[in-house]
Image (tube, rainbow, N blue to C red; front, side):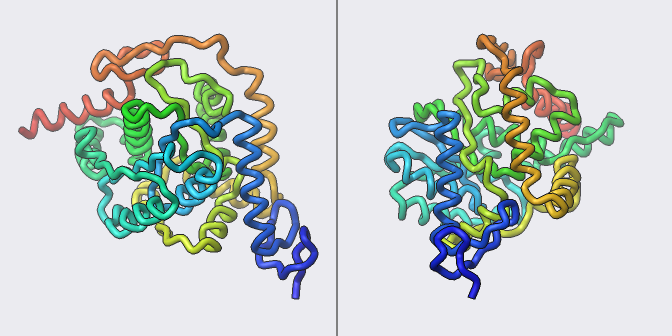
Length: 322
């Protein structure tokens, strides 16, 4: 029997690659909770009196972040928001039922919302028309992830404002965070790189601060945590990742190979980038312009936000069809 490297008593059930330690069930769970709470404390992400909206998807990470968060914040001050993206073969009602039950069990209210009903386009409907637009105008078609990411962020922010929450929590893990850092480095997008830092400003009163408590937890760790606590979660990927691979997918594959060769490389990279980017944070706070179509905040030097820009392209196709 292999003994836990931490307590020296119990049987080890998990090998933590980046530390080389073998952990028992209790020590593994304690390690994950400690690292999540360390990030929350280090960057003052959440305090006990905050009112928090949590984006829940039915995936492992949203379960884990909700479970740990409910130990820090009064569950009465947590609202889960499930977004139906409208992706055939991926959006499943049984997952929403499971999420509702889980939220109820820990005393958290949960709201189900439809992307199509709120914004006018599901991911499938958007991609159907955008592919036609791209073909007709001989332009590069964006990925479904681009629209989905923008739309999800908008919906979470809208509901956070409506519910008078002062924080939006997402379940992005270490793998997600490093991929996003690398993508913005490749694109040379300094502002978005700075905005990823947990101490960054929101730069608009219409934006609710987003935080990512799982940002130091590897995906394989959050997966195992979810298994240990018996969560029923969605285990298959969005079909668009398979049919239309994105830059993120390619970056992810490279990082997976690097992690195999150099365990812990993503944790070291996170620490390095956090420390480096802290020196380029935009201070004092700047005032973001608002989109002249929807009135939501947009990037500097833009009169129309990216979401409305995408929707306006779709409307050109719909105008011709109808």
